[in-house]
Length: 191
Image 1 (cartoon, rainbow, N blue to C red):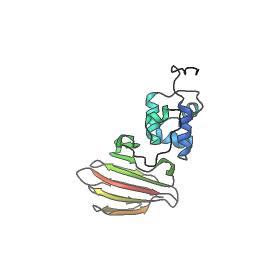
Image 2 (image 1 turned 135 degrees about the horizontal axis):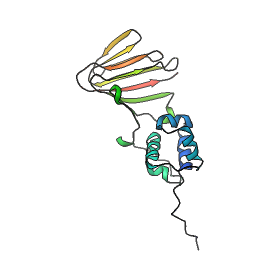
Image 3 (image 1 turned 180 degrees about the vertical axis):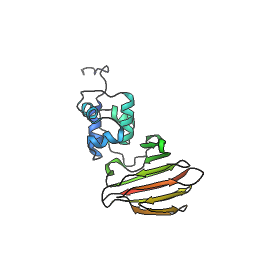
Image 4 (image 1 turned 45 degrees about the vertical axis):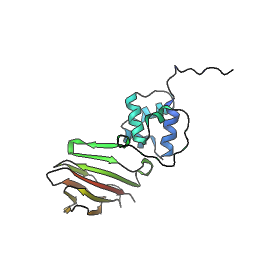
């Protein structure tokens, strides 16, 4: 006769969190930056020294690109052949103060090598960046609206459907110069 399993204990999120983080090639520091959860809290969760709140669990699931239930389940699931992320599962970096929203389309395990985003700029919005690592480049394809790219002292308008390719290892900016929202795909390649 099997001993009944107690359902009063909270789920052990730590093992699932560590498994998913390592499978994506992320360090605690990487996940901390992406999810907005302190590195020490992540370490405590992984060592089962702390149980995350629902809000933290939700942020971690979004950062890892998984359903929240995957973090709450201690059973390792079979790897899916096709993984589809719903729109609400796609991690987002809101820059509302500057009038932009970046949706992270690329998988987290490629962060720091190849990154791709959907960039939405409100009218007058801008994404201003400090230099990335040496040799980094950006590739911006305009889907709708009107944008201007600035690298150093040079500025260029990007036409609808066109792609701007430029060095990202110096200060650069993408600005919406139109009267309505602009949307673009942005690919960052690190060397």
